[in-house]
Image 1 (tube, rainbow, N blue to C red):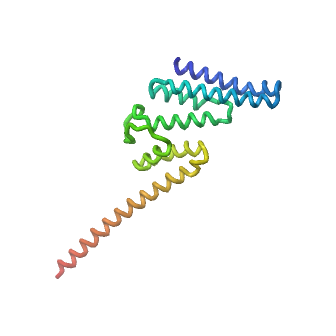
Image 2: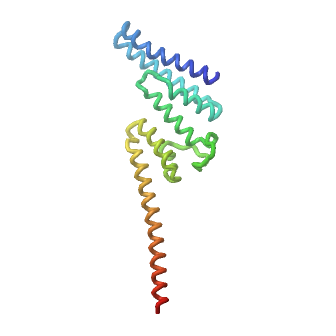
Image 3: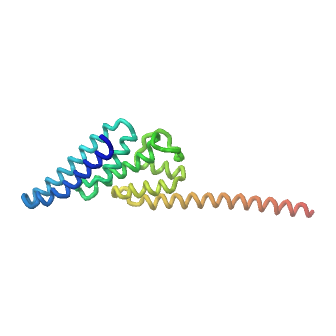
Length: 183
């Protein structure tokens, strides 16, 4: 199936999910809400199953991009989940990195390890973007952005301190040499 066809099918699904609750609620009341959540849950499970069968990282990334833009009728939870996976595959998959400036190797990264690797390699912008995605996914990542900013400030402060220390030593060295030349 081509991307345009898949996008059209997912768009049609989203439109039907949006129409469905009003029709079901008019007929069934409270049971309609249960039916809508069941449909959303089943659709997300089916999407996960299709995602697991993607033969290449490129196809997986394309499908994740489509799923991230799809309304599953669950208040955006599934779309946020797929958006996070899309960001992760773009950052962590070695075959999808164009210039490999991240130097993350060929490992499979969990969320925390990927964030740590981005910070360790001083890719602050990517780390901040990944932290935003993690924060959107829930409570355990509540202060991830703050942590990245803190790490960057500490790194810059240490770097500045090292440079200042070198300058101070050179200044002291040359001042002592000048004093010894006078005698």
